Image (cartoon, rainbow, N blue to C red; front, side, top):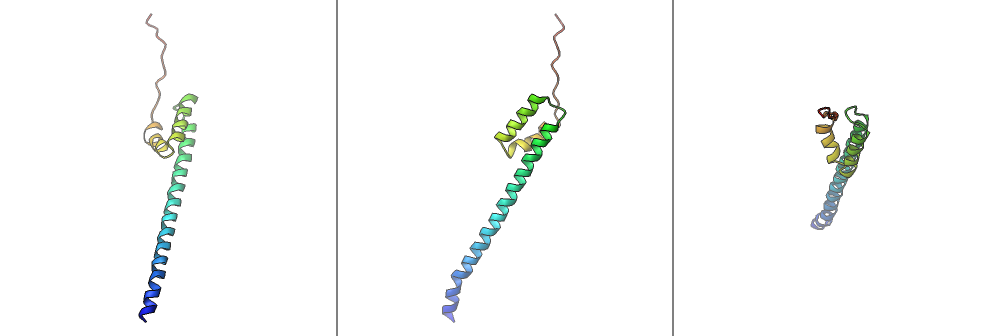
Length: 93
């Protein structure tokens, strides 16, 4: 009986390593899908924003492309609710 227990110990370790690898893979896929959804939502939200002109929208989209996770997070925390003050012509001449 001792030889059976010793022979099955590597098989149990291998099964535990396989289960851990599968769990890590599922977690990595879930994080990747979440980041992709966040990125797409950020780009769509920036493009539909009425607070920015075309140049402002392009800058936000470029920032999101450069920083795929941080860009959309910053957009939703700070950029989405900000407004741009239009430049007024200098009439004090």
